[in-house]
Image 1 (spheres, one colour):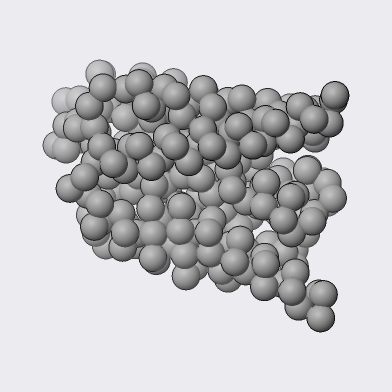
Image 2 (cartoon, one colour):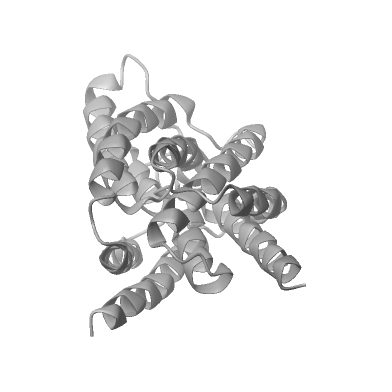
Length: 264
């Protein structure tokens, strides 16, 4: 009975992960890792990171397909950002496995708080909906996309996260696209980063495959619901930004606090 209860909790955690990925293109690993450690009961933070990365990568891929149908993915920008980011993610994952798991969670929380605050302070929620990477715009956009992508990928791999909470502001900073398009486009990178990080952890034997399957199953339902909600909120872009930033800061405070308590 206890085993069944844990399975249900893991499925519910997956649904929440998928919901946030579909709604704001972020928050998958931000939620997955703490949920696996503090709710599901995965003992090792490193195993939680590896397990969460697989589920987040797969759920993000489902979200990409749903956003593509809604035409909210800027494909050239998204692909360049993702390719540059994967290179950084492999290096970051290698570094992250060398760091104590509790310290990694604490640092993770601090980064989340900083990014959330920066999103609250950013003025306006608009952007250029017509931005597009082609020969004419490549000189202006390409260096920015590659630079942001590599840096975000490095942090994503280091913390074992899909990186959506960094990718969304990264895409906005690199291209000035509206947040709705940044959410859809970010899922391309979230999926790529997640699978890159997951493969590194899987090769090291740091994945709970049973929990990963349950997270993915719950996440498929959550992702579909999240994409539907994001389209409803498209006309209220400022609210979408605030939801995104508030979620990141709240969870960042909790994770940083838990990490700090270990060393007190």
